[in-house]
Length: 98
Image (cartoon, rainbow, N blue to C red; front, side, top):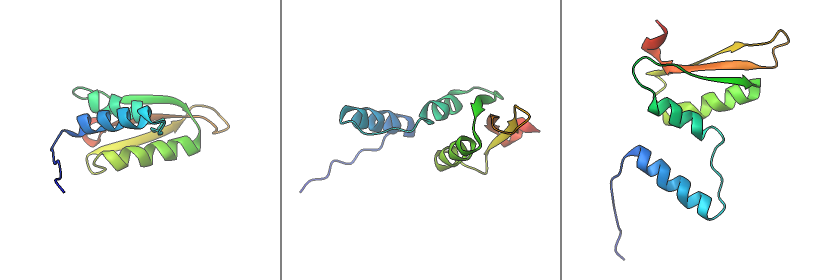
């Protein structure tokens, strides 16, 4: 048996995995576009996501920390309505929030 071993960038790997999963009906996370936006940001930009439920905030935070270094990146959230049912999330490098 011969193994075909290749080293590719994380971005290329995510893209290929997404294509393969989509081709056979597999699932990709609804948070994937957020991860791509975070990875594509420049300088000290902050990525924001609006109108999330508390469960979605928790899910997004867990998803991002799975793929990003939690020592370097941070996910902060704030309520956007008085009853606490909707949140806005701010994602950036730890240094961007100083």
